[in-house]
Each structure stands twice: as structure tokens, then as C-alpha cells.
Length: 55
Image (cartoon, rainbow, N blue to C red; front, side):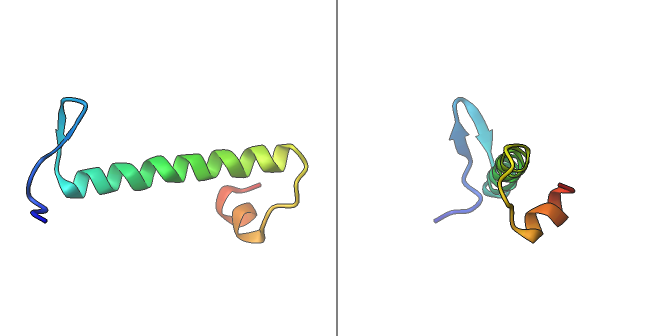
């Protein structure tokens, strides 16, 4: 695998490093959303969720 080869994402070129960064950020946003929704719904959430997201 050539990590310097551009990755075409719907017509936008990404480097492997940028793609990885965007993916991690994207998933972190989803995790925070799930954490907040679970907390608002009254579910007992893990302590690390409460500490990480201030729930």
C-alpha cells in the first residue's frame, strides 16, 4: 500500500493521513452523540462516557 497515493473521496483527493484524521474525528462525533442521547434517555452510561463528555 502506498500511503502517499491520494484517496479519491467523491471527487475530493485526500492523503492517507488526512483521511485517517477525518475518519477518527467523524467517529468521535458519533460517539459523543450516542453518549448524550443515552444520557438524555435515562440510560446508565459508563463512567468514562460521563467523564469524557461531561454528562
